[in-house]
Image (tube, rainbow, N blue to C red; front, side, top):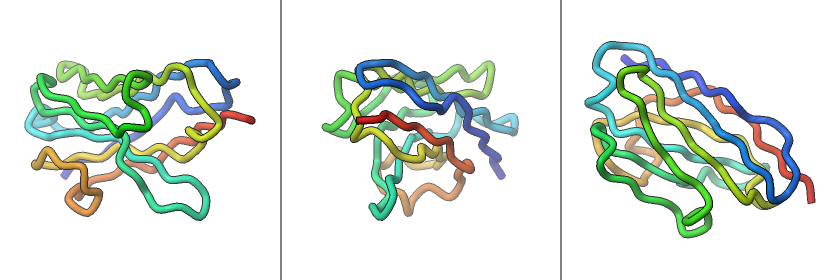
Length: 122
């Protein structure tokens, strides 16, 4: 079992930055691939970024590539999402998720946090 708690969301002006954090319970954090997903009102949950257990492999959705950076600190059981050059279309609830598979498919992540809201006014 893995429990995940996100933090760091908020309201930021277009062009600004935020860093989301996701703290995980358990002593086996490093075996899990971690990902960030987001869901805007009346839209489906979409993949944002993922990172392997060691942190050596990352990938991003095209919509955030070059602006967002995913990283992890296995000593702190935490994964981060640094978000720069934020746009109104980035407004969503952001969720972190854990899986034993390095995948972009939400259904393959069995563990989820409760979400943190990011709002970028237009």
